Image (tube, rainbow, N blue to C red; front, side, top):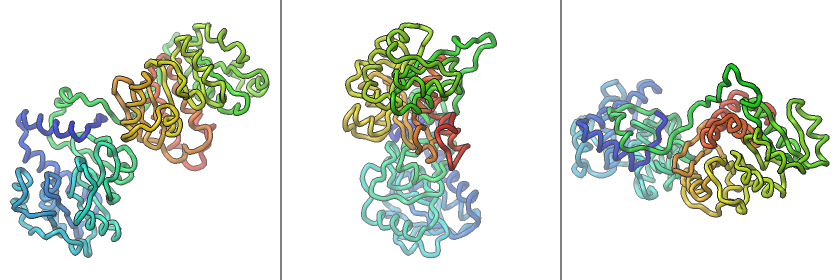
Length: 456
């Protein structure tokens, strides 16, 4: 269930489910029941205030209220608008609720142990204002725990942006599949724990929708064949710098640890002694031989950027001209690069991305896709919500990047991991996804005190 659906695609999934014979009322009943189940899993019986909006999200809230009341919760329900103005399935579910409907007013929050936020779903397109804003701000001020229906009201389901205001939920129950806004900040921080509920939409609808975004999954690095030798496991060539000598060494160590058979660092003559005093398993060559080193086809992948300084762009151009799979990081990320291909992985953080592509509008997912399309390369846009985007539109959002990674050298390790996987034959896109997943997983295991060397 790692596919991500946009708001529009989720609407199509609902319609396709209806065309296949699944009644909308059944979907809403299942959705409301799933929210109620999440509430009673997390909270003892108590006083619950259910805040319902005027659309289908509010209909889910009516169903949730009914199930919570049957379970023994003390439920108060408020509606934004009039019951008589409700339409379709929401109107039916309101008719099945016998507990009374209160006007939307902050008084309903008095002595509440929990709020169910069923005001607005993921398709909200304008900032929250008026009475809805007043209610959300009151929930925030009172620090009442919130369980959100679909997304916390105010969070854009496609971008994760907050439209005016949104409460921090302890849990969010969404339906069928997650949306990008559940994974992209700041929305991700608002959602709390995200539960995906199966409400009866047939999985087969995905074949027609064909989503191109997904959540990154566990990394599965290549397993060498029984008869493998060091060259069949790949030989990575890394450009080293003369001052920040640790960067290329971290990358080389990471590449070897993730399975590359060999790693060569090509360094300036004045720094060769430093590199040769490092890991004994790393080959060190004079960077003056860069063209000669690239001519050896056994060096089947190249990493340029970590610690290279101003000469990185020229080294990158030579590597690209040699036709090798390349990872370009740090100083190699310049607008002066030639046309690229999907054999190239760019690994910018936000500042480097802006240097490459200028001011690109949209969410991080949008920007990574635009960067990949413009450059022709795979783009790994680093951050707490790292996005890996392919020029053909495919994209993956990584969710496992703990704050301990905010330390010098962790990006060099990530670049080395991705390049090491590419040396073993993985595509740039798959290598970027796998490296990001393993990078975050290891960092989470290590926890506080992490330094880049620990990742290797």
